[in-house]
Amino acid sequence: MITSVLVANRGEIACRVVRTCRELGIRTVAVHSDADANALHTRVADTAVRLPGSAPADTYLRGDLIVKAALAAGADAVHPGYGFLSENAGFARAVQDAGLMWIGPPPEAIEAMASKTRAKELLGIEPLREVTEADLPVLVKAAAGGGGRGMRVVRHLADLDAELAAARAEAASAFGDGEVFVEPYLEGGRHVEVQVLADTHGTVWALGTRDCSLQRRHQKVIEEAPAPGLPAALDDEVRALAVRAARAVGYAGAGTVEFLVAGDRAHFLEMNTRLQVEHPVTEAVFGVDLVAGQIRVAEGHALAEDPPPARGHAVEARLYAEDPARDWAPQTGRLHRLAVPDAVRLDTGYADGDDIGVHYDPMLAKVVAHAPTRAEAIRKLAAALDRAVIHGPVTNRDLLVRSLRHPEFTAARMDTGFYDRHLPGLTEPAPDPHAPLAAALADAHGRSRSRFGGWRNVPSQPQTKRYLMAGEEHEARYRHGGQGLEADGVRVAHADAHLVILDVDGVERRFEVSRYGDRVYVNTTALTALPRFPDPTAQHAPGSLLAPMPGTVVRVADGLTAGTPVKAGEPLLWLEAMKMQHKITAPVTGTLSELHAVPGQQVEPGMLLAVVKESAP
Image (tube, rainbow, N blue to C red):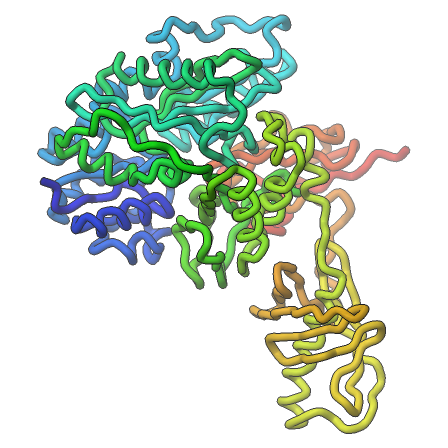
């Protein structure tokens, strides 16, 4: 019987595994990189072991160090979570060879299915060996791992070699394996998957379906269970195929079989031999704890002959520290506050005051709603996200809320091209026009109290305060009147340093205000307080390329030097941040007049990388 589990992972999934272990009375051991020294998963575990370094290749991908940590901490089992080494058969064998229990499928099953190329061959499906114009578009995919890393859509044959190279580099960085392959890319399909849970006694459960069609960069954003609108025959088919795939490799534990559904046909994609990020929606619908199921299977317990019945509908949204309006650029910084209503489930690897760094995936949390019907679950989740308090880096919260309320999603007519079609509208800024005034009144209240000990009793000249909101400057005007603070067009019903109530056309609106330095949050609107006199040195020449995020310069375009002619949109250099590569392109057609970036260089947001001087018209 397992008494102590080392969780060979980090962040949200490590906290998730620790939670179940605690409920089962099992002691937990965390591992952490130097960048994660004070991360939440290290604080909630019973003990923690340092993995020297910060890059995944030096820490969470070092199976030898993790096995050594488990033995040193006295653990008797290892749970891999997802990502990193969770689908590495060599790591699973190393755990077992060290006399530890592996909470996952047999290494042979991982080996058979972890490589997408070998998995397809097992089922008689061959990847494309040679790509022609007739095959386009195609999808380049990493053979190991997942999460959208090492994956590229290629629509032009001339781009294939460059995208293969980029995918190999990204896959090697994320998974320690640079193998990639090419397969047809089916547009307009839905991403549907089946959760399986199998024991070592021959029982395999197919725990319904999930739809994960809403994706950015081939990484899932919103998932739900069951997959809506599947014809009964197709639903039966994919569940039967999932069970057959599990039995074919002698599977044990939790796993997921993924399909692309187009029309009334299901195309096999892969089998993930691990727990999936979206497993909570299945847990909610079937009333099971899949992590507890993994542990019991590892201990040799048998599953019941049939799974529990499904009840209701569940929807999950992945909350990321990223800016969807800026090519999904990941964001870093201090997470001052994260709170969602109790009506939904929150799985997170962060707590208030934690820092979001550059080394790992930018997912902050998963928010999950369960209800009797799909419509009720969607409404519940959208409302919870809308009311959530998120103070810190830019997130995709507004995108999630709008996606959940989009008529194409509510009618279950979505496919994997959802964001390709709708992203501009979903990211259109819609800040609250009264937020700058509320921020200014809260600030003025605090300063008035501190300077005068109360309100001044005589009218004053209008005061102004400038804020940056949704990329634009806004000016708020107010006065200190005999009855307190006053503003044109609205009645100030109440104002203090944290709460402002404005009467707008006879309706009282409440604005909760929080401030962290020059960053101000008014309800869900973020603003930056601007100085009265801008810094004249904070200027850059036209055509300047600034680092959009902290990261590492991993590549500069071949032959690129000062004086090189470039075309608008041409890739000039690549940054790696949060396990993804990001292209920096020429903003205009002209000449590269300055190049400051070099491969291997660490950059911070706003750092000057290059300058392109536009050609004369």
